Length: 210
Image (cartoon, rainbow, N blue to C red; front, top):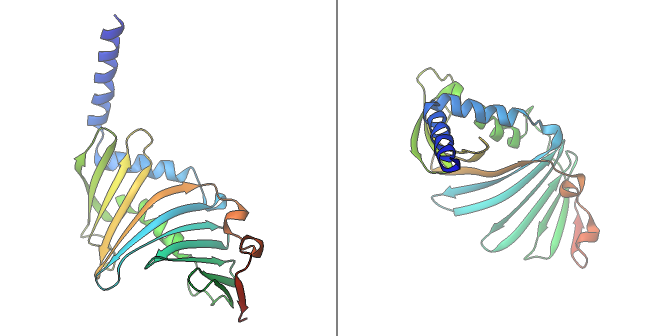
């Protein structure tokens, strides 16, 4: 009897999964993201592939006006902190931290906010269809719709959504010779994660150019 119940349960879950349209699934993903806001702070990993420079990956943490970006360029570790007024740049190969004034922002939203908007705007400006499906993930191909007013938006994007949680796994967009993938998105960032502290870098030369 237990075995029969398990089979019925599996069939019911599968039927619900099949019944969902791409727009419904993506809307569920957007609803999960909407449960959070930037007051919690969020983090994501961004991978860039460029024809000339090759591949570059960075992890970005954002909380309020503060950001921390860490990455590796040609085996050299680079970390940047920014609180909206001051910027700290750590170059491991030089064993040096350079402090400068932050350049005035010309946009009302940060680059990280703009990147996150790409997830919430998928169903608004794109025609979405399931490209493939695994036991744990949906893979979507998103093509820019003719009605999309933003002609600079990527012509196509690839979105991966986790089935159990409807959480975005990754979003890949290609434009003008650059492919960008956003992945490992999480909310809940502490002040310590985005605040520079010289005590964490003993022996490193600090150059103040403010």
